[in-house]
Amino acid sequence: MESEHIMAMWSRASRQAPLANYDDLLEMLATEIAKISMKLSEDELYRMIAVGALMYQQRYKESGGDITVDLLIKTLREGGRA
Image (cartoon, rainbow, N blue to C red; front, side, top):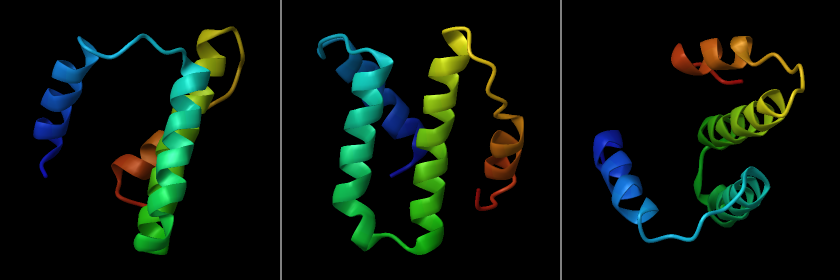
């Protein structure tokens, strides 16, 4: 499935889903990653965990924390493993 299709699905689903806070979203993401983790390669799993880490760090950055995510974002954009 293409990322554009996933984004479109998120857009449609967001109008129907109840609002959730960052902590709820992070918990849901962790639960879903755990469910599929045995089906992923080590690199795929680490990339999913890295995306979750970005969300986690963004949550704390927006709430006044000072956690740097630039290196993690750069690594992911370059296709590397965090």
